[in-house]
Image (cartoon, rainbow, N blue to C red; front, top):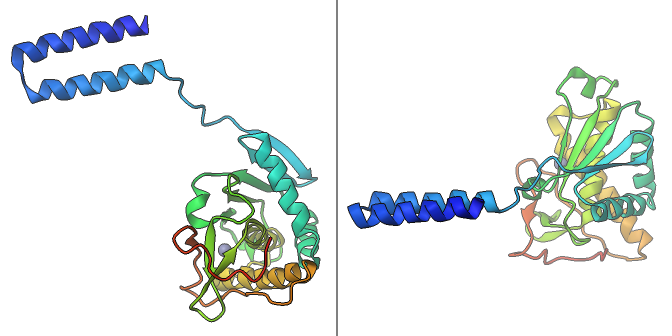
Length: 233
Ligand SMILES: [Zn+2]
């Protein structure tokens, strides 16, 4: 049925090309083939996702089960450190809901933590929070960040990246978010996590991250490939 419509369309277009030989008609033909092709292929359902509960108030929303397995594993690894347990406990006793969801757009920014912008973020009350995270990454993560020396790029593994977002989430859910220094707040805690993870992995050296406003932004891995790797995941 769709092919017949497509075939009739092509016949009609060829007829008009012969008659007019105009470039406008060639453009029309290209558009017609494009639309026939979109009829023939299944459109992805962007709303298709599954939800799971990690704990009473931590919900995750993923597009396939393997993402859920990966995320649960990372959360469990984070909890092996003291600051990781403290952060997740603070989230779980905040009285608010955290939703961690897979998002392809989060690849660009290496994670986004959001909440309604209200005085509750800073007055000790807190809000419900979401973390958008690119869950198709592997353990190495997708980005690098600047080291404390402001020159070298260091690793930003999946659990370092996730911990950083959990730190934002914790403070937004507890109402202890530093509006004017929210990145600094998360990076300082991320550095404690980096050191705790290095200790857990019995590594002596650890690279920590700079928290000077404006230069702390993560950069995409690949070209740089995070040259400094003191701590393996
Ligand atoms: Zn951040």
